[in-house]
Image (cartoon, rainbow, N blue to C red; front, top):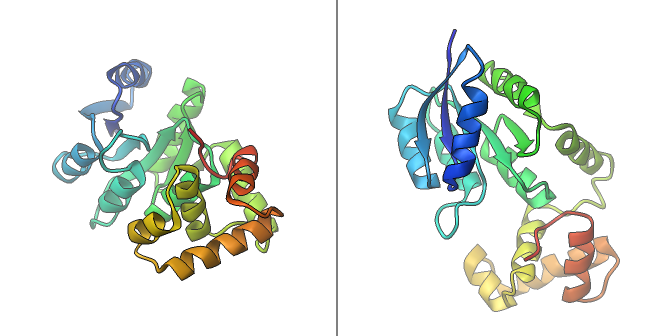
Length: 209
């Protein structure tokens, strides 16, 4: 059976490279490409697609995790395999919670990518070894792991937002934002916003500019 693919990435060179690799597999057929997350959602609903290869970052538009949630929410939706350069806890958790069937890094060898596509198409989980290890580490030490909301707050701190701006973006009260940061400081063993961002970046929990 042919596995029909949709490539979603805002870089034409990346899409061309992916297509070249995937075209070498006899049971793969790239049936559509999307340069934005919004376009990916539209095509996934309209085209006969089995697996969407989804990047996470699309510039100022919709995020890949948001697109993943919209795609997977539909009955009979295609599987979504995230293919990205980001391996932070914040990105991984957001994608998995959005319904992604797999999560691979863009430096994965072609044979690993092909295997992940087939695994996702079969309805099974396809996680890069490094990603699976990070998720296992979180499960082993749940008391020390930052929650998805704490990671979201800390990522926005790293992006330079104030507590007031964070509260508006996440629809939280400023008191709740402060409470999340108190928990973050305790879990990371730090006492300031700057130290929290530095510690989280070192542990690859969040992205930094």
